[in-house]
Length: 492
Ligand SMILES: [Mg+2]
Image 1 (tube, rainbow, N blue to C red):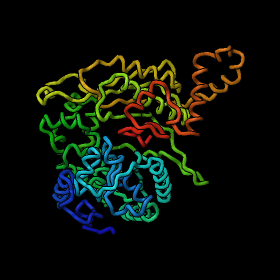
Image 2: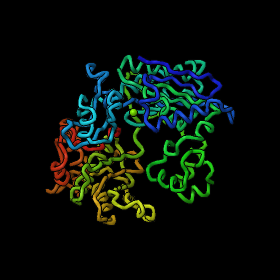
Image 3: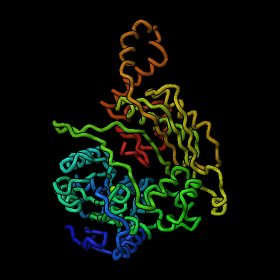
Image 4: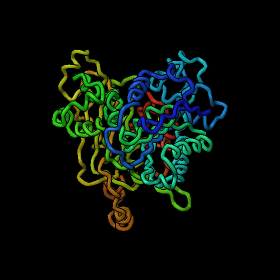
């Protein structure tokens, strides 16, 4: 099934093997730009000496669609579209590569996908199976190295630095990993290899779908020069737009801008842009879980917990926006307690629909359509009640715009390990202090959280909802696992 297109000699700075059987025609504009640029870099001399770090970036192609194909072999090789029935108003969450020639892409409406690809097979997607497969994949990666970082639901970083004598060249290890994942889990994988996480990620974009691409050490800067600036990780929509306003289109253009100017324009993000434009990224691969001798996988506690949801169609009713926020806080705080953590601060984010004209947008100097408010709690807390009230009051303080709401989200930051004695204190001394109302306000909420958590673990999150979030039943389908959101944060 895998077909090697080209394996460039070591001196060109790029090793490339692709599973793509229809080379240039099927590629979208972005990746053809990438390929054109990288092909040019083939004959460039190295500009710096090699470093010894070898980082792999692994990405499952069309993850949720591939999960369906893995579970149901009869769907393999067919255009699978995940998001729900084609009659629904939802968007395509994931679609197999067999559907892409028809023009189907993640993010387009399902109805449009059905028009473009009438033979498409529409599925709801199975997030539980997805999580299970991700865990099996993580376990498989531990057979190669203990330095595994689970970066999101479907992408991973591996640090193979210094393992060449033991395991062979990184490129060969990547090929073995890809083969094992396909054989044992029936999931297609793209692998990017580079001297750091950033370079590995860029290489991965080149290898998509199903290929392996390696940017050899010493060639990073040269290979980055003609890269469209938006391909650089960390350049989101807003930074990308601002850069383009200054006619900065490629990474080479970006390299012409001084550190001072970038700092003045983008703050700390600007400084990291300066480094990234040069292929510099010192962030280590962070081991996110450990495999115990008994074969169980233990995840490292998260640094922050974020829950975001997009409204589709956009929402104008403030009470529904608030209901969604409350629901997201409930989910985030459930996860917080599962990890025995408490949050030090809460951040609420609101994104309005952009209704401005192009001219207005160019002149805008305010914080624009995305508003963020963050506040510390008096003391770290894991109480749904406390976190919800803070998130809500942050939302209420935000300026109101005459526009529909596109997205709302909450992030719990500054996570610390929950002090274990608090629960003990409650159960031991609680008896003395308890009156007919059942203890202090905080104690009663703590008790309620524990009961609700236990029931949700047993029955499913969606079986128990607060009064406020119940309002969402009007706009969102409710399942055993909770509301089906437009942008489910599967990774957390
Ligand atoms: Mg993926």
